[in-house]
Length: 296
Image (tube, rainbow, N blue to C red; front, side, top):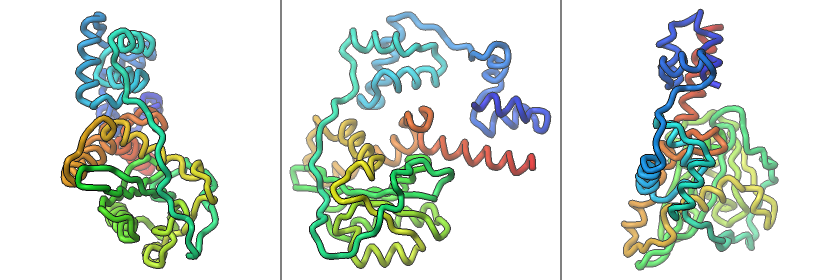
């Protein structure tokens, strides 16, 4: 916990400096020291409902009651999960429904495939140790678009992506290249994907070799071997695509950019990350690493 870490090191550094490094307030730390709870503003049901409706509209229906309660607490309000769940239920406020999706993997090819080196280890100890990739399809009135992403498993951030009208090898090489330029990982990073022809292609394997990455692939027909990336596609489609009509490719591209770069990476609270956004989770980890180095 942030406050406990600050308390442990407050004799070595200034309190304001420690709080700023971990993006918490001095008043919040002092409230925690007094009794373990941070003072929050108490709202009436009517006031809380208005706030819930505002957040629901702001995040376009992305949050169910657990994330909604956490978001309200982050904004400084007292918000119990049961109370938020009741208000949402009584007023017909719910997260977008989930749907089943078709498999887009074309594994009926004769190109070489790699062993499943990742072995469902979805929680690496540091960034740039394990990335996962996949492709999904998106419909517009102008025809299909295909979205390829690269996900850093450490903080579940989309570090690379590509959106194209054809599902050829360049869509995955472009996404990987974007990820490499953004992060510049050291050689040895494990890249995991399914056995699709795009990931098994000579062009993609050459790009992995160029970047010094280790190739890992899911077992045949086993979507759970790449579950975090599948889950990301489910979230994107549920929260931004289903129930909407996209007349042009440009509209879908704008939606994908807004979701990935503005909302998901920087704002969306992720349950796996202790209800932090991917960018904040990574920054907190980097700050903690820096403080540990200074202490040492």
